[in-house]
Image (cartoon, rainbow, N blue to C red; front, side, top):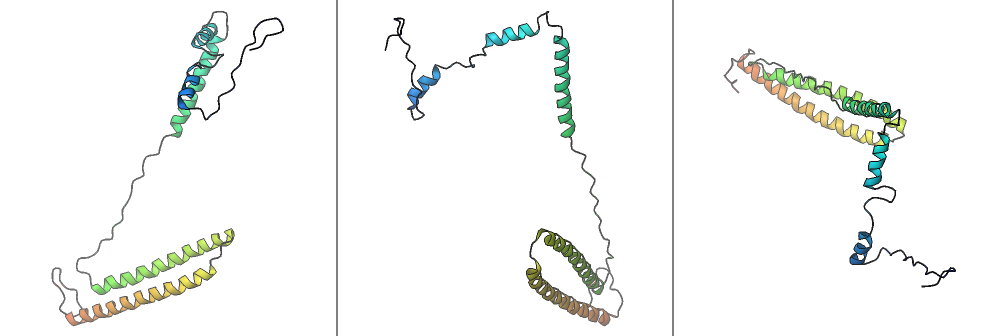
Amino acid sequence: MGQAAGGGAMAVIPAPLPPSLPNRARDAYVAGMAIFPRPVSPKSALSDLRDMFSPDRPHRWSILALSFALTGLLLWGFMLDSRTPPKPREIFYVENWMADRKDSDIIRKQIEDIAIYEAALSKKQQEFQKVADRLGIEWREEEVKNKARREAIIAAIQKRLNERLNDALAKEAAVGGGRTPPGTAAAP
């Protein structure tokens, strides 16, 4: 410790502690700190609150009302924003089939459904290809491979359905061409 110019002792300021201190030394260092920062303490906060509501402030009630109104407006806005619309009703359409329909009718409907599906798929692929062109994505090479594979699969499905259709027509012709009564099977 040294002497000041006036003859008094100089105060010693401790150096900041490095972050690598052991836990015990760090706890002792932190324990000496105040809970509130220097300019704020419960005593000064209460005195500020008392000064705010002292009778010599003419605008205190209007400011208080304005702050409540703005806070309420914000809360009301968040409440409106968080609302979810009611869930719309779901409508399920069910096709009603005759109980005595022929197998050939079922297979014809399957062939028709595949044609409709392929047309819708082709249209959707064209839409995505336009988007890919806009984004600069190369799709033509993959499309050639996928189209060939898809055509082979559809041809196999069509062949299988046509075989089943011919078998069903042959069975119906053997029975007499009429519809079989419900609950009975057609003879092979």
